[in-house]
Image 1 (cartoon, one colour):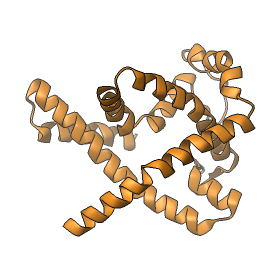
Image 2 (cartoon, helix red, strand yellow):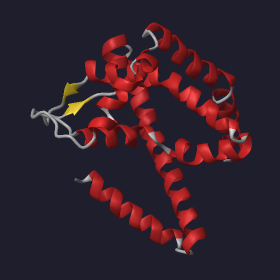
Image 3 (tube, helix red, strand yellow):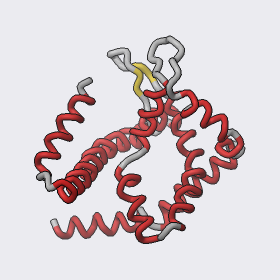
Image 4 (cartoon, one colour):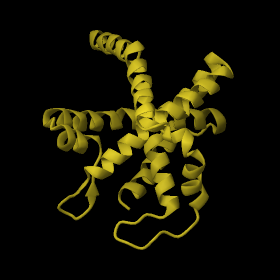
Length: 201
């Protein structure tokens, strides 16, 4: 088990080092240029169409979300453990200058996020229940024709959700124990109950 942990640690160091930085920043810059700097040119329009209309009523239609539902869904799928835990750690280690670089990288990353959403909508489909389904595994398979990669991505995503949920629950329970002295087991049960309500509608 110890050797496995060492191997995972070494792989993680390689992946989350220079290669990942070049891939994320390089990809974001490429898409920013390719899309004509849309996130800068249309920034006021983007804010007006999202947060500016957050309390307005949607147009009626099948599968229509309210602007509030769309905004909260987008935030829920974007903000994860890295944002909740990583940002304070980055500020603690890098100082106030870290905020500037995070904002700059996030502006570049808008092109990547926009591309993901467009591809997700373009290649989505209805399942047997008549519900819309989509995401990277769908546009990898249908857009690129790489079914084995799409299957691997879907499997890896299932594994990632387990680890991500554990990290977030652990951070929450540790913080609550330190602030209010509530046992982590109690916090875990409450979180499990709340997530269950959301998952099962």
